[in-house]
Image 1: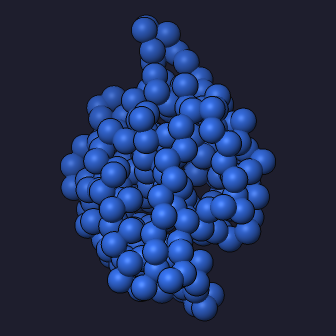
Image 2: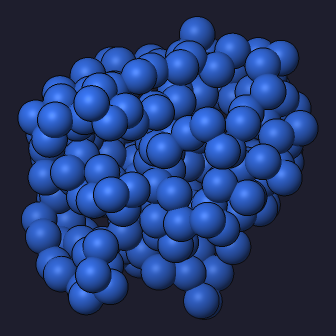
Amino acid sequence: MKAVQIVQFYPELLSIYADRGNVIVLQKQAERRGLQAQLTRLSLGDRFEPGACDVALMGGGQDRDQEIVSTHLRAQLSSVSEFVAAGRPLLAVCGSYQLLGHSYTFELDGKSTTVQGLGLIDMTTITSQPRLIGNIEIESELNGADGEPFTRRLVGFENHAGRTSLGPSVKPLGRVTRGFGNDGVSGFEGAQFQNLIGTYMHGPILPRNPWLADHLLDQIE
């Protein structure tokens, strides 16, 4: 039986929105394809081996935890960049989505704190009030394994104070039809680059949209 190697980044810190559900659904969808799903949980200090991973998952975290993770994650920049450049799928949700950009600025203990991101996506995030909370629906255009674009509906739940601004060349994950999205004003939600997907959508997103798990798996077969 062919195996699919799944890596979950820092689950002890980036898993506050039931992100384990994304892992479970990805495993189940892989098994339905006759694949043996093998999960590796990457902890702080562990080295990410891009050649030993087929699909990577990153979850949400609190501001303090994101600050801790950013230091360790930036030490993996060359490996993560290699993984993304090879066209392997990576799904990053909320806090980890913010860390894919250039920077994330938030208030901590009454001070403005800026965390440096990976810079894999041309975007920046700052926090502002009120929090953007509620159900969200978007129309998302993705490229299939054959390279042809297709449009599907994605639904989820958002709960974030972040206001994410995409650079002019960045393709959003989708256009908001209900909810707030990246900043509550642009009408865009998430971002995509190669087969990297960043989003504020919880739910978790894969249990609510199992077709997206299949889409991730399509990119490795």
